[in-house]
Image 1 (cartoon, rainbow, N blue to C red):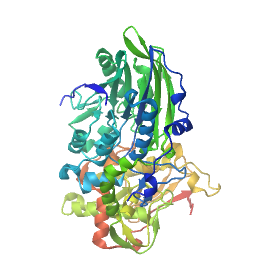
Image 2: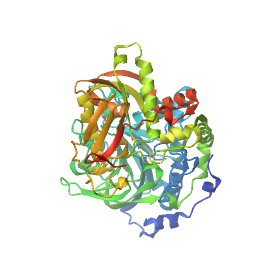
Image 3: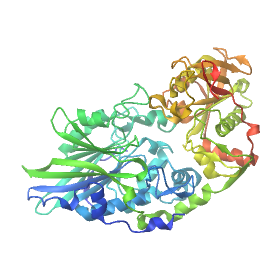
Image 4: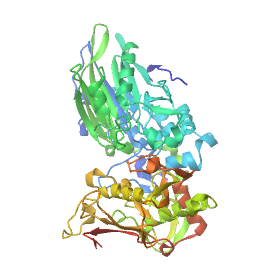
Amino acid sequence: MPDEEVAPAASGVSRRNLLIGASAASVLAAAGWPGAAQAAPRDDTLAITIMGTSDLHSNAVNWDYYKDATYSDSAGNAIGLARVSSVVNQVRADRGREHTMLFDAGDTIQGSPLGFYYALVEPVTETGAIHPIAAQMNAIGYDAVALGNHEFNYGLDFLRNWISQMDADVLAANAVHAGTKVPAFTPYVIKTMKVKGRPPVRVGVLGLTNPGVVIWDKANVSGEIEVQGLVEAAARWVPVMKHAGADIVVVSAHSGDSGMSSYGDDLPVENAAALVAEQVPDIDVILFGHAHRDIPERIVVNPQTGRRVIMSEPKNWGQRVSVFDLRLEFARGSWSVADGSALTVDTRTVVDDPALVAVVRSQHEAVVRYVNTPVATSTEAMSAAEACWKDTAILDYVNAVQTDTVAAAVAGTPEASLPIVSIAAPFNRGATFPAGQVTIKDVAGLYIYDNTLLASVLTGAQIRDYLEYSAKYFAQVAPGDPVDPASWTNAGGTPDYNSDQFSGIDYDVDIAQPVGSRIANLTYDGAPVGSDQQFLVAVNNYRQSGGGGFPHIATAPVVYNAQVAIREAIVSYASAAGVIDPADFHVENWRLVRGGAPVF
């Protein structure tokens, strides 16, 4: 492993996936990697390689826990750190491990049933076990990892425990102790590559996380952690790194490159990676993530220096590995980047590294057993395939669980007299409950996020505003146009998880009308909803904390917050009832209309 200097912080896998993959040369050539075809470097030049991953989301092996099968999608992609390891091994073999480094840009420990299980079902903080992602990253030999916003989902104690298990340096320069500018985590590290006959190359890597942490995980970080803007933090720390002797500066940023934010203008820019390249001098490479996109190479010229910054984002879940090829020149006693390029290597070109599969085999198998545990019997099959444009029974089940949980919690309080409404969104169009046995994996496929349940108070006028905001999810469609609902969704790039549906009130969404004038016939118990009428609203923590930018909800009074995980609440609810019968909970209380006429 390279030498390093750390900036101190202030305080059931398919056997066919286990075969050895293609040769390094063939894999890298297929990806367009120059590799050994490069001319031998001169004495005053040196070729080095930096590899990077991002948004692994606790995918360890090429397995889909929701389907209980080898992962597959329409494009034939593969996922997991075991696939990443095979690519990394081949690049190291081709380039020489002593001239390579491996970084990650965050969102590593949350996002799959594996991550959920070892955080909430059998927490590693209680058992003392090594977190499976820490174990795999240690086995691969990561040099440094930046924190993503999802690292904060399970609380600071869990995060710090995971960091303590990591061999790699875990970085977040812009996450500071609340009310100070003092880093709460290690801001940067300088790694040293030895060069025969020359001074070593000193590679500095700066970690940056996402400002949205303070919204999305407010309950976990409020009063503890604040997150500065990425540009502000990079401008502070890059000169420090250069002064400390970094020849090359790499930024590992959990931030997309669009310059846009999902949370409005109240916080620094969410997707600021390109802004960092443009506004902060002396950066050579930016590995970025968060947006779950495959961007093999983006070149940004810093106007202050005229130098190129090489950027790359590897596709999420270990589907791609970014590979930066840098040619260094030695002059006046130090190394600098003369030129370089980047690409992403597709992990479909390899198979799972059997050594990395072995590292997590027992933990993976425990999760497979867990997700296949039966919880209830469904009287009929239910699907979320049409949940984005119809009121479906399977999404009503989420609302029923949320409504009943809140009702039980507020019993005997002043809020018990308020009518309860509930909000849910179609997280996964592929979710199903089969007729017959329903397992934990079926529930996990329906509710794929690790959200917790809260209840806030909104007025009728505020609920109308909220629904109008949600209705921007649909394109405007004339009454006489063909019925093609799948083409009407995701208008303006709005994701499915930002298409909120209410239960407990009745309303129409008129998609023939412009955005802001779509909600009609808003009633409760057969009467029009009054502007000042108060409702108790069951809502998840992501939405209540401001995620998605919905109006009113982030500032509404919170009357219930017991940190109950919604997925676990669904499992408990189903287990207690034993039967899931749509006749008990499915009410078609909202509908799409055009010019007042129902679409369906």
